[in-house]
Length: 561
Image (cartoon, helix red, strand yellow):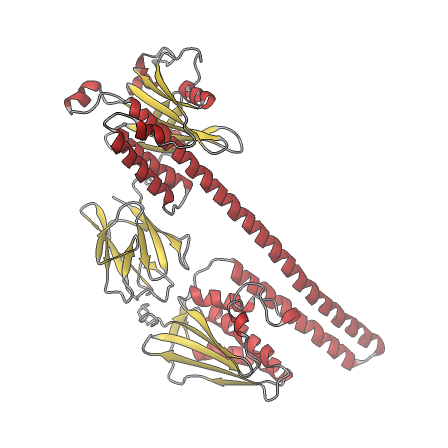
């Protein structure tokens, strides 16, 4: 059965891969979709993908914001490998999974033959050096009539390199497929040098459909080593007559008549080689009106392709190294920030313990109670810090369940009443009496609302007639559930509003961790919603948490306007 996949390269579900087979697949916000996207700009049932005549066809289902392929709006579109499908703010990369649906690994399908006498190079009939400054120059300057088509191939490969790619393996596979098609080879493979061990390992393989998918491709280790040593592309003819190959187990059995091998020269090092061959008998090619073997201009073109592929591998590795460095730097900053917060909390616990110890020694119950209050307060701080960190750090899907939003928010109000009273804050709650039971992650929403309410109480603490108002409701036009938290505090300065949802950015100074708002936003976006803020200096702020309502049948409503 023909298979393919859609990989989310941009959006809440970034990194998620969805397999597609013969049955129709629906995409949208509703729970009934096989591919569910937590994106407020995606319709309940946005689009479908269906196998038609051995091709996957994408169809828009009258979505509010349209369906796009490679930046262009479509009603229906036959997908090809590498297409970018955009629904709302989510971008998915389509990949034909035929090559991935193999039970034998690439390493098992490529056979690197043992070295033979290096002085015996009878099969090498031509060789081409590198043109590092302009790899296409020699191709363009060639007088051969095939040069224009060669430049077209190089252009197509350059386009593939520029496309967003899931992995280096997929990029090399695309380049190899185009190469095999362009030069008329029967098979080909890419071999890369492992940066850690220095070993040469197969990274991609491509072959015509007429060749058995589980057939092993023999590659001359002697020729590969020669290319590595001399940094030159070589063309071999009548390889089956080469005395270096053992007739019992080598490429003679495969009937290889011609082969080409070129270096993948990067900016600073030789990354690997590209190896292609022809196994089809010469008389069959000639009868079909095709060349019986490789041409010299094709060798020069393959050298240029090798250069392009090497730069692509090099760029990919540089990008991965940068990402790793950024992650390590961010980790270091995170650890330093957390250490600071934990240190302050532990100092608070230590101070409370000291008061308890003094009270016990002096038989002073008031001092013990005061000390225990300090300890309990700091215990809650460290608990909330750990919970926020866990919520923010791990990727998760909302644990949807039927729940009452009014009751979920009421639990938050009950939990925070004592804190509000301690800070002389009037905490009010106005639930929507007409709000029906819905489906959402009650624990996640509880945490998100708790963080916002906590921030609101902290914002108005010490103010005269301090009030925090919490409301619930349902916006019928957009079919969105919402929770509003308003306060009459000092408000948020305009220059700070853009940063309040960033990790470790806090307007509360030493009292805040800078995690609460970031965690709440993450939870809402996991639900396909978001948090909006209205604030005026000297008047107060209003935070609105909104997300799509889900019906009893698992479907969600319209998109946000």
